[in-house]
Length: 269
Image (tube, rainbow, N blue to C red; front, side):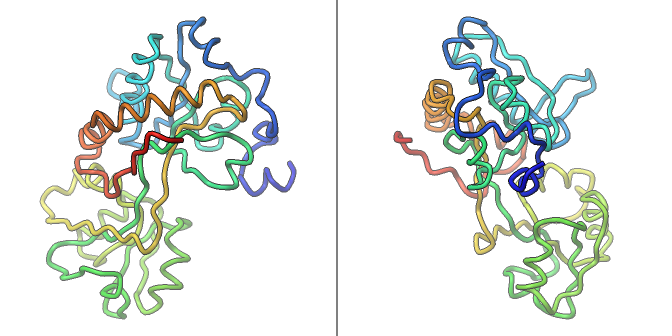
């Protein structure tokens, strides 16, 4: 594994940069095959998850189905994990990948990205009775933040909220339970799936506050490096899905709240 692989946390297979992999299918090949292969991660509800019939459902499968319908081909969903996403595209096992594929400059050395499909937002999760409304309200020694170990928010909290107490937990269900039980006052983390994941605690009056000061990033569809014919068609399809309102309606169906930062839609890409 070389230095770039280490930075990305990806196997060397992902490093097929510079030219399009010979195994990646351009648009004409997908049309001839009559099938679109899309990678989704079923461990990221409500983006994607297995239902009681062992079918993958969620926001991303619904969007993928709309794209396949526009293309006039059948949809084949392929289950991928976070480490597998880019290798699956590079090896031609999928035509494009979703799975909360955040657009970053480092990843763009390895794969190509479409225009964004949705934003990724950070903010404050708290109860209505805490009176918390801003980041500054968290920076007090009387405030306990429930956070998940090893997440992106931890270094930000250490730098921006040094006075707050931090209760470190192993996973998000434990984080949500600690807040519902009043063992913590708030949490600073990704907020997009919060409304969905808080359903077991419907007795609590929750408050979700977006904080653009941290960062707003964007998830896109990841395609093989140099596969311009497929990427350009996908950009047109996504423009139509955004302008028709399908993306936002599908987001609210699964995430149970509007997208915190709407994707700026432009006819140019």
